[in-house]
Image 1 (cartoon, helix red, strand yellow):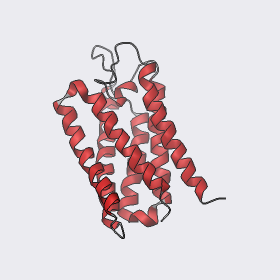
Image 2 (tube, one colour):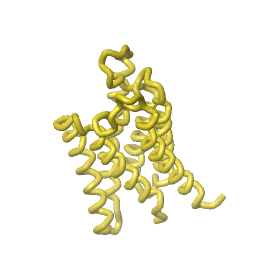
Image 3 (cartoon, one colour):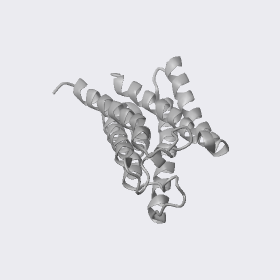
Image 4 (cartoon, helix red, strand yellow):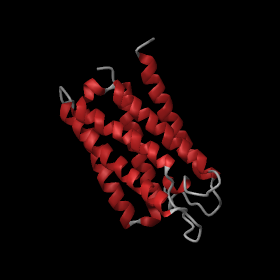
Length: 192
């Protein structure tokens, strides 16, 4: 088996995830607004079409968990473990759904809480994993360090901005996802 095949599979899963999450708003009822509502809300409990966003979460989780195994030597135990936790957390966000954006709709509070815990874990794991990987980079290439720094800053700043500007939460979260896809994609392409 070619050494490139696992990286190609990771890249394909990342691309499939990004496409599923980009297409998910088109499967939502008319009251869904992709600028205001998050990806988690496009995978919400009891919502027709939520399977598409959940598929995006599953593919993202599988891709990152696989990449964690492939890059374990380069990332080190701390980096690989944090990113593996990101992958498992993404799978949990698919298994446990967010409450619907229509606050009058019925939902399971425990499932919503579990989704929130999983999503929080994903965010923390990404930031911690990027820090751990950045600290191991040898030699510390300026461009890679800058991208790592930007990814860390975005992973902290955007969730705070989402709280302050909830009418833009979906747009902000999608920007954060784009940075994560780019970071993981770049890592999947690395051969050193």
